[in-house]
Length: 173
Ligand code: IMP
Ligand code: MG
Image 1 (cartoon, protein in one colour):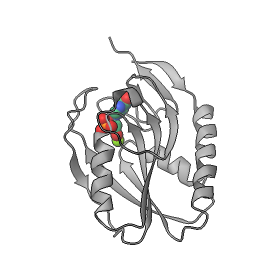
Image 2 (cartoon, protein in one colour):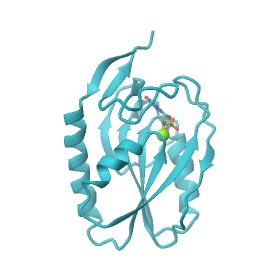
Image 3 (cartoon, rainbow, N blue to C red):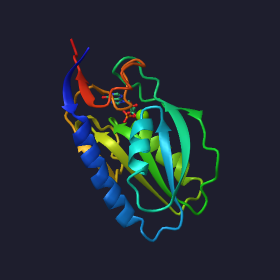
C-alpha cells in the first residue's frame, strides 16, 4: 500500500548525521545528556541518531498512545510505559518520530518537566506544521513535510510498515 517514497534511506542517513553534529555541538558541555525514546515509532530514529552523537549519553524508553485509529488522532494521550530512571538534574532530549497535532509532545513535555530535569529539548525526525493544534517547541527537526500520512523507518499504519528502511506516503484512497 505505501505508494510513494518520500525520503530514501540515504537521504535519512545524511539528515541524521547533520542532526547528530548539531546536537553534539549543542551538548558538548553537558554532563549527562539523557535521551528518551518515545516508543514505538522512534526506535529506528533513536538507534541511528545515537550512533552519530559525539557526546556521552544515557538512554531510556517511554511508551505513549494517542488512542489513534487509522490515520486520525483523537487528541487523548495515555502513558503506557514509564521511564525506569529519574530525571532530576539531567539534560533530557526527547526523541520522537513525528510531530503532527503536537498534542502528544505537549503532554510528554509537561510530565517530564514536572520531574525536575535541568533542561528538556526535543528531536523529531518529521514535523507536519500545518496540522498543529498546540504550539509546541521542537528544537531539532529532521524533515518538515506536508499533510501526508507517512510510514516506514519506525512509523506505522495500524501496526504495519515500521520495518521499511525509507519513509513512504500511504495512498489515501
Ligand atoms: P500528535 O498528533 O502530534 O499527537 O501525533 C502523535 C503520534 O501520531 C505520533 O507520535 C505518531 O506516532 C502518530 N502519527 C502522526 N502522524 C503520523 C503519520 O503520518 N504516520 C504515522 N504515525 C503518525
Ligand atoms: Mg510517536
